[in-house]
Length: 116
Length: 112
Image: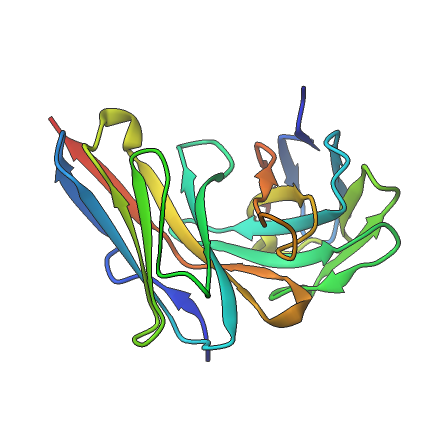
């Protein structure tokens, strides 16, 4: 049982390049999330998707776009990468956000992105 | 601005002792609180949660206490073990949009 799978695990970009982080979950969850984590910091929400076909901005959405491709997949795109986007990116999923029995988030292993 | 925060960035505890990790929140509209554990190089893992209609909830070796009067949340770990070494985050859900917002984290060091 893979849970939440993120690709790639590591990526180095030059300023201005674009890339897409992929995320897939096999738990049939409705909600999916993208967070970024900077050194010594907590996780900051970039975008989330409460259900297939919907996406909403989180705390730090500027410079990012997302696509909820289907129930399983939620991708994060950087159109023109900047050094300030150097971070570890985590994808997560949950059954029904926080309105369900539990709002437990299941996280992937993270994608470490460096922008030069 | 309103945020979820922590009193101490680092906590050192003797193996076998109890650990108490604290968290303050400022949004009285928050109705759901969660504790996560993050080990080095991994994604956060759910530990325990509590809703605002409760004051206390217990799990295996862990207890979460919620004091809504002073907007304070704590995680108690009984008989701390080396495997408890990690960064612990409190998180809250605010309002009806169900976004989960994380605090900055506390690193727990276990002393032999």
